[in-house]
Image (cartoon, rainbow, N blue to C red; front, side, top):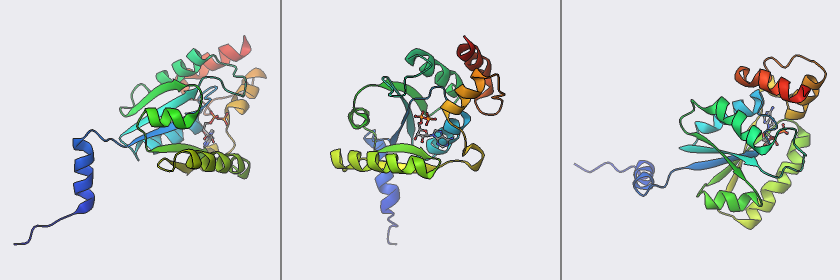
Length: 179
Ligand code: ADP
């Protein structure tokens, strides 16, 4: 009897054999992590073997939380996710992605305003390394309006941030912002 041959399964098996896991990088400021980020993380983690949440060291956005705090909050939130790790990076994202042997960059898209900037970054990165893909994930409709800046603004003015950030970090976020 002729042997069945499935190229897709065979390639996957070979990839695993040489330790060639599918690694994706999800970069951002995470100042602080919100439920919008978490939604993207959980969906992206299903598409790869390992997801690296990469926290930008020198955010242009002048972060309210220090790098250690941003990483610490993410680690607390993600501690039970088996294939998700938190790291930080400085300099060019594409260099970090290469260093980690990752194949793709994950980006979340909320509004058209996100698209213009993200398109430019994706094309720049494609130009720097054609082997690395940028994958865009549409926001969850429930988090369309949600950004770290909105969370900070609300917390600063005593607004309710319940449901906007993971419950296990809510108090910590409020305390830091009110300080
Ligand atoms: P922010 O724009 O909230 O300051 P970051 O720089 O930390 O966020 O964003 C990291 C990534 O997460 C970006 O790709 C951004 O588009 C995405 N992202 C942020 N908030 C959301 C959300 N509510 N829904 C989908 N993607 C989001």
